Amino acid sequence: MGAWDTGPVSRASLDKQPTEVAAMFDGVARRYDLTNDVLSLGQDRRWRRHVLDLVDPEPGEKVLDLAAGTGTSSVPFARAGTFVVPCDFSLGMLRVGKQSLPELAFTAGDAVRLPFADRSFDAVTISFGLRNVVDPMAGLTEMLRATRPGGRLVVCEFSKPVRPAFRTVYVEYLMRALPAVARRVSSNPDSYVYLAESIQEWPDQLGLAKQITAAGWESVTWQNLSGGIVALHHARKP
Image (cartoon, rainbow, N blue to C red; front, side):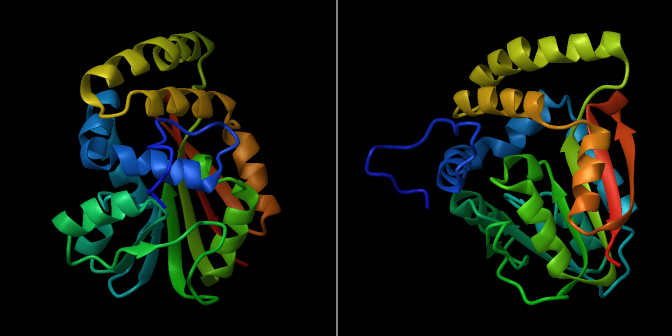
């Protein structure tokens, strides 16, 4: 997936073709976690703790962690005693993750065509990945298929700050400061221009809740983190 006759893809386009997105993430895999830590001012770690709390996993449960990248988001679930499957379509991310976390069951897979049987998992989570799926509705439907009845979904994704003044400052950071900082710390700064643009076009909290409901999930709720920069959506399978 990461091999190209024309050379590496520096950034994906906003039509989010899977080969382009995967190749872009292949190219940033080695410094991905460090770059995210810098750009989020360390908030990404706090956001991951909130995801774990909302999933509220029981020891022995099976958890699918989609768009898991290098597995950083899967570690808290493993420590909680679950059988967690980090799944991603970037082979570069999976290779880096397997080197540092060989105990995890890294699996290659696309969110719109999951390589798992029906009703395989007690919970599915996806952090900062649904926005990169070529067809988010198809991805949400696949997650529903792979979850047992009564199972949980938690989506952690960038959203819209709730205060207008803060939203203005945040947009300015996204479009100007974030790419500038990425040029200093990332192996592929152009990919963070894509990040900023994809966040801008992503639906707000209510808009995503409606998509999750339309995909067949029920009892959809959300909570804002960091003033709405990030939102956690929670749902159950009927």
